[in-house]
Length: 562
Image (cartoon, rainbow, N blue to C red):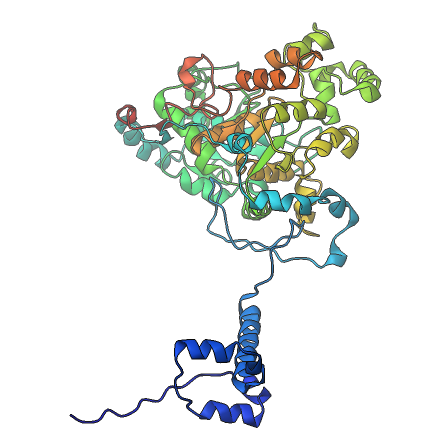
């Protein structure tokens, strides 16, 4: 048998390490020592004399060099505490998610202002607790999501609806102009109904005109807030959307309706407007808030959902920043979003009082401008409070969250305008939950500048971060809370806490109640108010964009109905 040739083995060593070795050490690499036994190798290598062995130093240098190269190549820095300027490489899945991945860079320590440092003070102590996950059963229970019962989006339009779609989108004779008013979320609701009314009349919809808000003075247009091309594309098979009237209709005097009655039906709309619209070609509607009935045929309810949850996507700059801030909140785990209604105008409009320090100021302003009062004028403040018609203040929000099991280290994003009294009004909340942030705390220097003095754009950023949260809770009802409730339901019934103000405030006033008993009662009062699926049809007058089951969502047992 032929004698096998002895194979040579080679070791690849970086040139930096080769240059650092002495000639004797290098020579030792070229000598092939006899293979020692396992036991003798251990004794020789770990003996005191082994430290004089060149091979020992070569191995040590090799390992040091290898670790250095890995550190440079893969940036093996240890985890750092949560910062107002974090850097992210992951993008959460959400109903707003675009295909873009946003990346933010860390700012230097000199760029971090003292206010952000104060807000984030103490986070290091909580890091050890966060890294352990949800070992505490109560904490784990707080973040637990409700049972969605398998409901999923289900927008299958009927054959009759699809049959008329082609003729409607090809029509060039009828155009609907609408002027929508209020804040951003109120405008969203009116835009949804404008699309449905255009479909009922078989007319093209001119991009809605946003009326300048008298309170915030925001002059933003539709395309500043929403992605116009996406809006047109998604609704292309339902309603034709045009940016302006064509030249054939530009001089037409529109049929104008200044005051449409509340909750009108499709039959009423056709009887009232269709003949005049066919004759004049242009119809102008104003003030659409709650004008269209909440109880519509199934196809029109589905169209409402299609507009609200698919077509009305925020403009790319808003969407990008909103998703960035949501990623920064999520960088250390789940987070809760609060919509705090503690602004001065809210206290004035609701007929409620914020606290002894500002009660007289609010009462005087309400007397001077009684037209601002939107709550029932024949009720006293205490009657409104006990009826659940007043926003929760910071103390009440804190007690509610503690009773529901929110951990002290919970990361909380608060949406809304500047509270009356500034950050001091939030001290009860900050004291109990120190990791409390808003968009100003999370944004890098200059990121919010394009949206400054534009309340609608700021509200849109709040909406995105809140919709992406693991849990959402409003301190008071309103258009934003209702819109997010529907959006979270449509996304799979993500947890949404609805404060049961009418029933829980009696226990808030009972100072003799032991804390454990108070917590048990509060949890029991909210056991069915955590975002579980609710049928819109179980109560009359419910909005399908708030309760999308059953018209816009189905599960296996209800799939046939869609």
